[in-house]
Image (cartoon, rainbow, N blue to C red):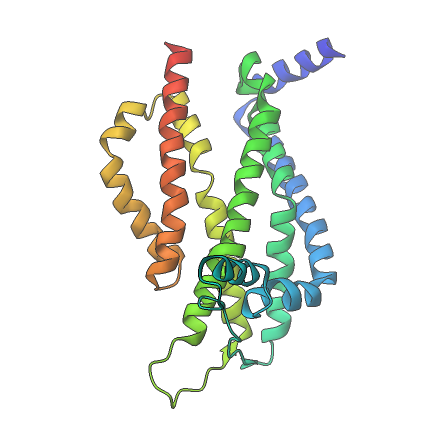
Length: 273
């Protein structure tokens, strides 16, 4: 069985350019099928996802708000920093808006659910070019990438989203303004924070592969630490809504991940020196 696998890997490694394209097409097809299956599940559960997940941070009984309120009683023995009711009125402005956003929920939900399998298909495509030692740790790499991504999604959902929604939902420029939000803005807002944080949490893995091919070193990362701080703040400002709290909250873990990237790069250098 092992010999058969070696033969398959050797055949794939010696394929022509067009044969590689054909193989890539099938890897993409399988990944899309996985996304499609996840999307079907998310579409069926679309109402639940919208009411209980996407609108969760807009409710005062959301888990994050409960934790903040418990912390308030621990620190101040009062509800000083508890989150009250958020004035949230949702409206539909376009005839197709609800159906279109239902499809968005399905597609994004399917992509999130299929993310580990998508990584597996990426690994299968690049597998023939990997060394034997690299193949040995492929499972760990896929697991690490998945854990980092889902950790970022959870961070964006449970930390960034509620704080941002509470700030922006209650922000008042004038008392004559009536707060009414579209379905598109709510779904897009929560997904942007969650998916954006998930992608940014992949930083340590990106640094690992860049260090492995010699594009970055731990010394370079240390040298440009201040530049990285500015870049992270700018990217955080783009990903998050225009409030300082969300920007700082996203920047802190990314900076910690950057420091972890320096550590990872130094370990890669010791291994290949």
